[in-house]
Image (tube, rainbow, N blue to C red):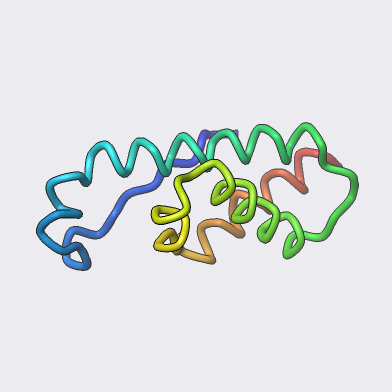
Length: 90
């Protein structure tokens, strides 16, 4: 499975966020990759929707609370990662 990567849309960023975009993308991607690894290892037959929620919760738990509060990944893309986890386990 390819490791998920977060890319921020520069059109939605304020000037401060734009300056920090690279490090912020790295931090968000790292948190999501760690969540993917952990959820994959602990997968026990949950549904795709449950895995999607688990990925988001786990990724946010690894972030600073202020960053976690603003982290709103694309649901369809997060669901795709969850589908890969579920499909690899069958």
